[in-house]
Length: 508
Image (cartoon, rainbow, N blue to C red; front, side):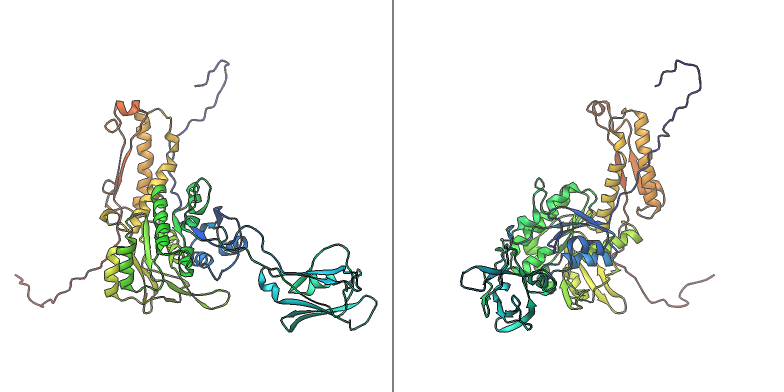
């Protein structure tokens, strides 16, 4: 309390005691995979597709990351963290093929040294031939760049003098195959000389292992680096299946990475992993893989099948992709339009041309009970997500929207009550905590996320002397008990129809 010693008027600002809880974001995905460029093992926020292309480059033929991020944004995703995995090649620079033309005369002096623009052995097929210039001069010459026996490029009337015809200037501006190396003084090359470029090589590919994806939290690699990013609510690793298709990772490696994804989400307890099935599986094979091979059990993971066929935005070619990135966009769109309490199912998948496999109702009958969410095509209704279950066998956590609603409530309360720490643990604090949490849950209930005709049926908040006895307060604890009644989706719609005989009722 301030001390007043001089007569006068004083103004004090007094806190109203109201510290409302704000809801946290629920639709921020984290993608882990290979990209054309960009920071490595550093979670980087992007908010739209052009920004992703600017930072990480475009589509890769050997990876699904860019395609999945593109599908995420066109389906309604608003923000995402990208973790680019280290390139599969070693850190040393690639070698470029080179060749040196001898100088005119017999002194053995080097005249011009050329370097292939393409790294690796692609430049070993090139050769450079010197012939007389079309306009003969004291130091003019013509260069022919050949690939095998075929002339690819021709540069006539070149010179080593300064000016527009300088050999280095012309090659730098016009050649698509070679460049002139800076080796000091240039000399006129010997007439009719031919040299073949050689020595090009790419770094050896390093072996790809599950540890590249899983990473390490302390080293900030893989999706272990995401432990420092609290905003993430979904984890997607589409390039895991790309590595499996290439043969870089076997089925045990796929299972190891997906188990690590689940473990990461359970450790953080605020995000859900979106898992893909292996490619080209039929319904029976998916069932066998889910039950006999994978056997996952988690309320923090969801699995989707089948893969989706999309058109490459650049080439127009059809590409078959794992659905996780597109499904993440559907989650984000549902959160934005309806709320996190709405199951992200019976929603159209934008940008999907067709499905990798057509599924019948009888086939989904064997997949839905084991937590495999199916994607289905309906006549005149498009391709839709037709499942909203987690991989948990616990009936309380069977539905995905329930898990994500609890994540939202828990994280919002956690971040919105930080002011309570070190406050006096008395009745006034209990009332304040109970009041702000009740106000937050009341807003959620009025938005339709909780079940019940009245607030008392939808939630309760208990914080009083009963659950905060003296021995608990002496230990520095403040216990608040919160219960909510989440709305669960109407998964099975049953109409019971029978015949009605007119006039069967008696009237008096």
